[in-house]
Amino acid sequence: MGPFLLVTIQIDLYDRLALNLETDLVNMVHKTGARGVLIDISAVSIVDSFMGRILGNIASMTRVLDAETVVVGMQPAVAITLIELGLSLTGVHTALDVERGMALLQSKLDPDEELANDNDNDVE
Amino acid sequence: MITTLSKDNVSITREQDVVPFRNRVKEQAVRIGMGLVNQTKLITAASELVRNMIRYAGQGEVRIEVVSKGREAGIRLIFSDNGPGIPDINLAMQDGYSTGKSLGLGLPGTRRLVNEFDIKSTVGQGTTVTILKWKNG
Image (tube, chains in turn green, orange):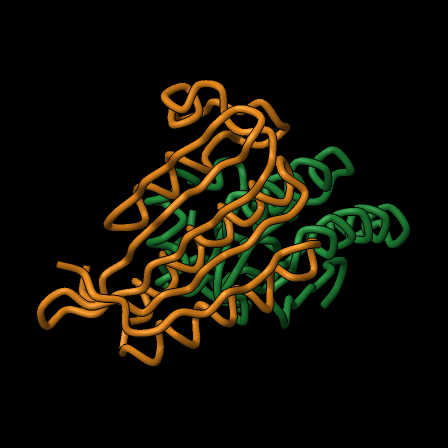
């Protein structure tokens, strides 16, 4: 894992839980000095405007603490719905799955290494 | 001509009611064979509206109906509350407009996700929002 936090959201969150996640994660980044946060939402069946805002907040807040956030595993139906709803998750890095998300975080930490290893389709 | 095949009332009094309510909607959508993308759109729309209800009115009730028109089946959701009401519906339906601390996507975004959308509101009396999503809509 290295200097990254991996968070897997296993259930659909109501608003209070999502806000708690935001606070806990930001505290955790501060406490551990993590350089990246990977949020796996593959088990999340809907992302509405509130959840979208929380993901955006987490990305902005961790960035201020010098950690990048990548959201991975979004289901296709969720992606379709998000865009029609009008949310484009601007400022939030996304990747198809955990593996690619990790590669993206690694590349942000060490851009030179990424150049040497990068031979698959990039996610950005 | 839209026929109502079944109805089910869910009362919403607190935030924790939202996830079970979404599951009830999903059950009905699955029952009529709605595909995953339309299910997700419907449930996301429902989630936006139920949040508005809690935020502005504190509580309310949602009626979940299975409806049909000819051979097409669909789900109709009617959200009613006795909250403060919306003074200017046209303004509330604009993208980016919000009196609360949200992104202002709720109402206009919700309308894009469903096939039919109707809102009635009287200041001081409450708001009723009706949405309908056809199985293949």
